[in-house]
Length: 193
Ligand SMILES: [Fe+2]
Image (cartoon, rainbow, N blue to C red; front, side, top):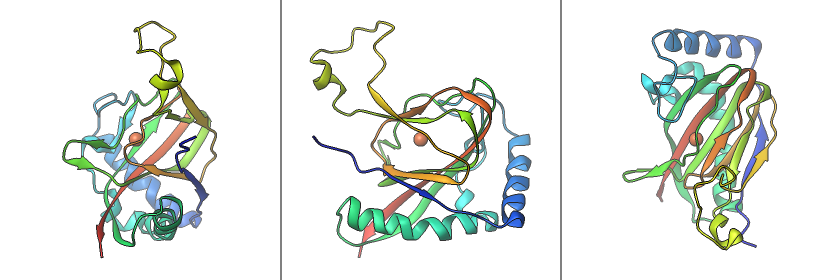
């Protein structure tokens, strides 16, 4: 009942495209601090810039994902046709034990219609978990702040080059990483045309 549409896909870059993306990310991460970006225990370019989608080194990612975003908008979410644009993006670098706290991409004036994550590199573990918006109803009780009160969720396994598209309001988090993990979050907004 009330299933949430989440799309999983796969894109690939040439070795040179992937190499150049790694290079610029490592340049930005050098000036970032571990745990400085909201909800992150790892390093995030969000501390310095939220506009990775405007860098030429990310064109191969954006250009391949946009058709999937439009298809997701039109067919999975069933919204009216709209002019969908990437509006914010950042990349997180996780090593052993790092994780992302539970959050959504909608808060106050920051409302992402469609959120996404693309794995430039995905080690073991660190899978994204999508939280069940009906948690309180399924439990039939408010949370009591005990250790077993983590919001019910579904873990989504993924590999390098996979991506997920999901509604910006859907809360999510990650399990602790094992090895290296580079996830690039891209947020999309839309104007009705
Ligand atoms: Fe997120």
